[in-house]
Image (cartoon, rainbow, N blue to C red; front, side, top):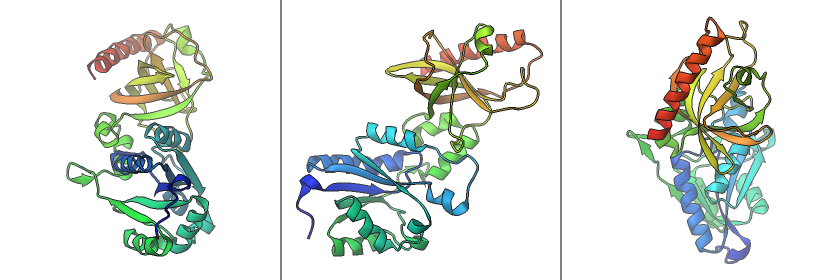
Length: 303
């Protein structure tokens, strides 16, 4: 028997959802539409850390979307409730059936929406067929989404990680239906940009966030409801520091002079412009930055 009390139950989807790419969005859009049409909440259940990070003990930057980025994007996609389960040894060792039973106690649901390659439970023993078996036993529906293809291959988080790592930010847009981005707080830097007449916003980022390679990018910055072009830099500022220090993300925001320290912004990477290089002097660097800003203006205006 399916749960008839729609007012107190949800429809859910389960998964890592790193990147929230076009395939993920297809599942989420169907979930949101059908949940809301039945007067139910659309809930998404995910994990932290990502199971791949947990099992492979990954310490290097990995995430396409941090938890805060994921929650923000999910709200924009219409998800009413995001449940982030701590992925630990106990959860990793749970059987597929016990995972579903415990989840139904935590989030009352009568329908589950999954991707074609969904696996769950210890040793990935659970899949779509196993979930359908449980659905008859525990009273919920199962909806399986076919893959969304890009150039004859399924869109995947691993493919997007490859593109990001190679700096192919322009090619990522159709995989995400948006530009690859970083959400972070604007923090104080060393003030050098302001002193040379080109102030920049230093944007904080989490250590496991996967950044594009060191270099200069045409970008856009979301500041509240405003969107501004920006020439963005990822790197170590070699003209000023001979020995690499902390990797910084800085954005020279075009046509902007307001104080945004402490504000959270979203930086979107639109196109890679060039490598980061060391200049002989500040004047040469300043001249190049002005060229980068002009190139950025032309690129963003044509997008």
